[in-house]
Image (cartoon, rainbow, N blue to C red; front, side, top):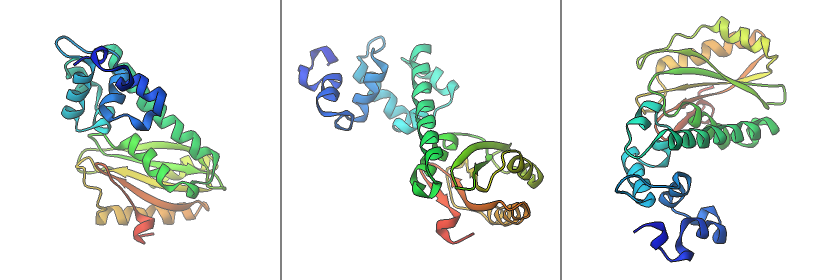
Length: 224
């Protein structure tokens, strides 16, 4: 059934305007974004297929450009719209984190790093640099590695902290395997960088490990 065949009150756009976005299912929200279907598929059917193929909205939004290009029914315009939605989400969270101390919204920090690193197929080590009031200055991806390991150079982390006049930092890296459980090497790296940054009076507040749908906090585990 196409959207035009649905009773007006149950069409995604009318439903959203009447009851708000939370009233819509994932398929309906995606259908609103896509606007049109593809050959042989209405927009609702296309949205349902994409959500199924990519394992939900999160999988779809985090898919690589190459993966999206292979998806039936997703032309350049639709792929650009999906990329724009993800980037808007990142920027909104970054703006919120700059407006208040980071400890006022720990879940937003996890959401932010998940949006930045959650779908990567290679390992990235990043640092969230904070000012003296623990507000976001910026997040920098400093090192990239393979699926197995990343080489992290403390002097580069210290150099960036000094350039940004940071007062604190949160270490972040992803596990492309999807398992967010910290390793012994992760713990050793945390201790090494914490000691190095203390020399320039920058406190490491946390180390976040990003996996598939999960972000593990060293601070919450008592590992700092």
